[in-house]
Amino acid sequence: MYKTGLFFGSFNPIHIGHTAIANYMVEFGPLQQIWFIVTPQNPLKKRSNLLDNYQRLELVNRAIGNDHRFVASDIEFKLPQPNYTIDTLVYLKEKYPKRDFYLIMGADNYVTFKKWKNWEILAADYKFLVYPRPGFDHTQIDFGKNFEFIDAPLIEISSTFIRKAFAKGKDVRYFLSPEVNQYINEMNFYR
Image (cartoon, rainbow, N blue to C red):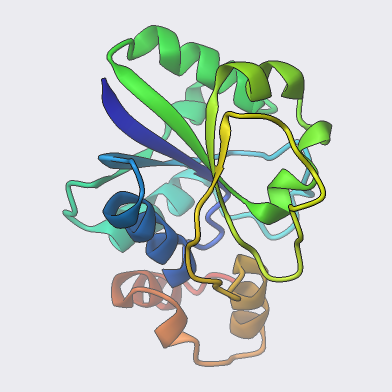
């Protein structure tokens, strides 16, 4: 079985925190490849300031370049909206039976996991790799044996911070890959 991490997100925009976590999961975790699943609309988040799906997919493609360990995926573009992780996983398991899927999530999502659709089924049937997020303590919650906590570096960068910085005309080039920064500036996103 090919161990494949699923890194779901709006990636609005993708930044070096996302790629650093993905790199850590491949190099220091159990994964062989990571798919960045660009989510059209997270049911638990507001849609404000969300770039078009294909523009965010393009940002992910530019961020990962030709790194064979990473794949930009538009799989959720083709599935019913809003996107629920359980539905996407059922589809992926059926379509790719030779892959052993692991969900990558931050501790911020872990502490609100009971809000997810069919969270009990997810916790029982799927494997999760949880990375730390500043300000979120997961130690008081236990969803079972399928959750592994990865001692990845704490990264205090968010897409919200990046968008707000662009809106204020700030130079945030070192928070993004050069290709992503260039594309955002060329397209005048988040201004």
